[in-house]
Image 1 (tube, one colour):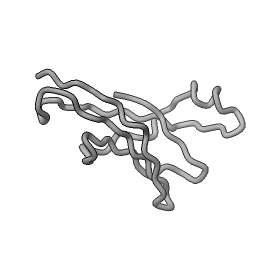
Image 2 (cartoon, rainbow, N blue to C red):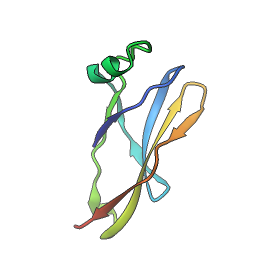
Image 3 (spheres, rainbow, N blue to C red):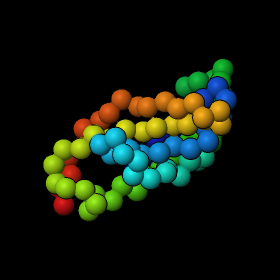
Image 4 (tube, helix red, strand yellow):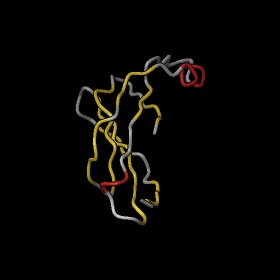
Amino acid sequence: MSGWAFDDVMVSKVEIMIDGVVDGAADYGQPRPDVAQAYPNFSPVNVGFTYSFTTIKFSNGPHVLTIRSTDTSNNFALSPGVMVTVAN
């Protein structure tokens, strides 16, 4: 999966959560010129992330996926949960 996150300070980590539990840390800091175009007054540059979600660790059926972004001041934001269905 991939996405983007930025903050008025600086994002220190992006974590992927499944059913409210951290599954792992995303690879954060990739270029996202589309985000910079959408937010020209903020000028975010390397705000993209990617994560490989390994479904075999989870039971078949519905799960809630959430992204938690943390800044360098340890403030965090949670994305709205998204329902995903695992079918191994």
